[in-house]
Length: 420
Image (cartoon, rainbow, N blue to C red):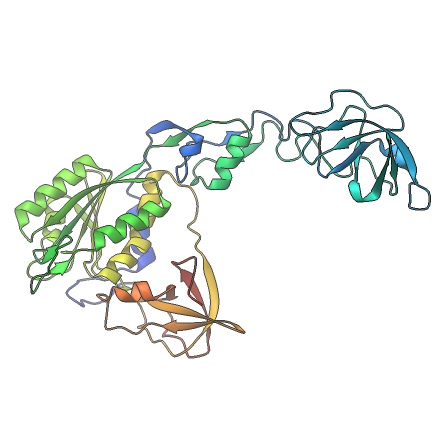
């Protein structure tokens, strides 16, 4: 869908259309490296990993109790217990290496290797020790309370798939299979700079008319939480065409993607658009997205160059909507972004404009019936505190003209813990 000239833009592109046009221009990084599995969190495997062995590698007990032959305790009950001779003890660190015969039992710990000849385990609570014998008060079936060899993973099974971000669970499974090194795609190199003569980094005192620059921190930490990225920070650049141009050229040369924050709208002092036009190709400039309309998506030397709006909330939404998919594509991630979501009922009406996708910052309040979703009303995209006060986003689609108080809505969380 196209829009007439508005907010200084000739055309506002819808979000999905913008992403489709942009992402198809770029390929995933094909360079790889070998890293220790224990240090591979949030890295992306280049290929599927198959188990080199059965897991567990032997039959083992799933309970504390006695290893027995199920045929020997057939019919055992409290009124008619079966007596077995105790011939040993099998622990995880010191397994029983002998062979069990008829009417014999071995004391066994959870996880210990099953003795040869035994096919099941009687739990401790169904037994009684009598000298060198035990009495069994419950019959068991073959392989009852036994974890069989290969029950978790069979040799040759895929245990972790290529193209996914490695989680702690993946890493544990790999190490459990004896895989201590993995081949992963190298990290995505990201160049980052803020544009604006009014910006300062960590000033002890803030001069009148100046602004503390926080968007680089926000974007770096946000992307670093989830993705294999390596940032090169070019700092703050004044609104000087030549200086911005030099940094952008250097950033494109040294990185896989270059991001500038600020200077992407159509104001008098903005230089990013002009540089993008002269050094590359503008694919999309202006998106039907509140609060990130001025986002600029361009290509330079076959690499993404993205102009992020300077207002903090707009920058944060742009990171989620556009930067994440670009990083995923470059990193070799194959899959769909799935986020934490909860449902709740709106505390008040929220309005939106047809044709635009709206990201509304909201706070969640637990109630006896679930969650109350409270929109955070602020004056605009420059209210950074609204992100800190909120718990997530309510996304209003392009074809919806808002929601009424009491409507059930879905919230995309950016916190894992909310205040109660």
